[in-house]
Image 1 (cartoon, rainbow, N blue to C red):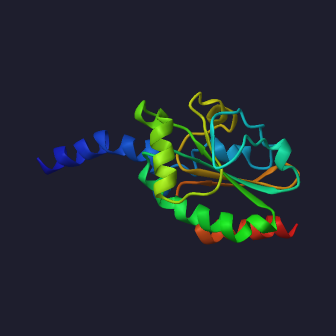
Image 2 (cartoon, rainbow, N blue to C red):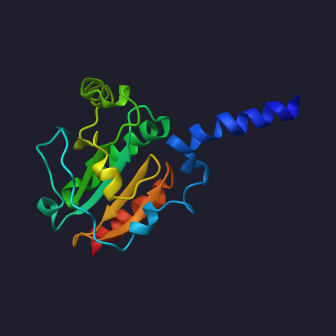
Length: 181
């Protein structure tokens, strides 16, 4: 019976880890095509609805270091990252870092703009958030997992990809390195 319980956990729970934050357990880094985007020109953003900003494009942010965070409101690992992203936005924004959250849903509930607004207000998120209900940005960036961070240099090249939550010190070191260039 114990073996059946373990099998049940693998069959039913493992897919939920990979759908949201499997990367946090180290499963996605080796498998993700998102990391294949590193050292490639960043695709232009496919526009959605914006919170905390008028519509932005990567072209309009030329000359800045851009951090793009693919996330969704219902993902606990994504929500856990919000304070760190907010901190980087406040700390490095005046030095040339632009933080953009791209909210890409995977359920009907996640497509609610009202629920997204409520979350952003409740969590005091002040960096720009764009909806990606069509999934076009998800496709263009070859996304597979939430959360994923892309760091784009001042010339528009993806220089760093972090799949999954964590590695904040490593990501911050990359931010500092790109801002110093």
